[in-house]
Amino acid sequence: MPIETWFPLAIYYEDLPDAEKHRQSLTEAVLKLESEVTESRNHPGMAWTGDIHGVNQIHTHPDFAWIVEQVERHVLIYLQDIGVDLSKVDLYIQRAWSILSRTEEEVGAHSHNTAHISAVYYIQVPTDEMGDPGTLVFFNDARVNEVCPGLGSENTDIVDADNYLNQLYAAYPPIEGRLVIFPAKQRHAVTMNETEELRVSLSFDIVITAIETSAGTYEFLTPPPSQWKRFG
Image (cartoon, rainbow, N blue to C red; front, side, top):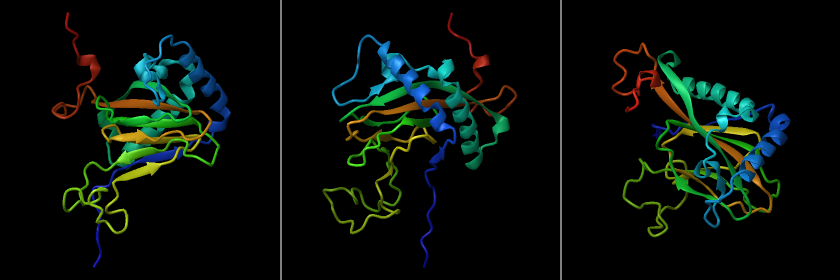
């Protein structure tokens, strides 16, 4: 008798063909932005992230025009693949920032609760094969197949073999030039960079709103910003 699986998490990725051509200029732009920040807000062992340093609008910077164009193009493909009617929505890059991970630095578990779609682009990835360069991990918080609480935890330890029906997380090792797109609400983390080299990446948060002529959709879709009124 077969076992059918439903409700999958949709993770999209694409290896961008022109990545190598833009690698050096993007790396230099990211390092320049980091150098312009006078006060570090990093905790020990935490990767340098632009969003907590006030550098979270790189999508408006001309140095990042190429990757912004790629993000927009592939997010549209991702949405079409999961069945979204693009004629009924508008999309906005809400914020975008860089991440610099040096030796023994990581990014803790979190989700992007103010956005709908998130994207990560790997500009530069360590080539040292002796250690983990920092793997993107998606956590299975829903655990729809956990037939009793804590089934797969180390304290219970009754799962005989890990498989796609009981896995607690999905891991995506960084690939230079790869763009990864996923639901912003999905809790994720980046493991420690165990190499002696620098990992450079970009993050994007995208918001979906209704278009102005979408009567009846505002119950579930945010009305377009053009209709908002700021408090006076």
